[in-house]
Image (cartoon, rainbow, N blue to C red):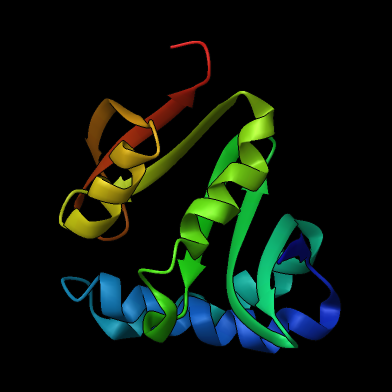
Length: 141
């Protein structure tokens, strides 16, 4: 079930966020994600966040700022169960969405393409020096 974030979810989604970033972005030092943990945790409760929950266990989440997807994460042991798809579907009501994804994160690139996103622009991310893509979903296309 997808529902709106509640403050009680914060520790679990931050655990999913940190683990997910370190697993999906092995080309970026783990210290980068650990360094950003507290700042993400402090702003996350103010964002529009939806969680995927089974029973009382949070298995994934998506954070969105207007039409920009700030992040989507599914616990590693629950990937491949269409949880990410359900989270994306929840926010597709916005009609147009965008996000940045590292080119080396090939699984994420394939996922977003399968969800109807297209690469609009390629650039180098300032803090990491890694290549990333701006991907856009537009319902009318």
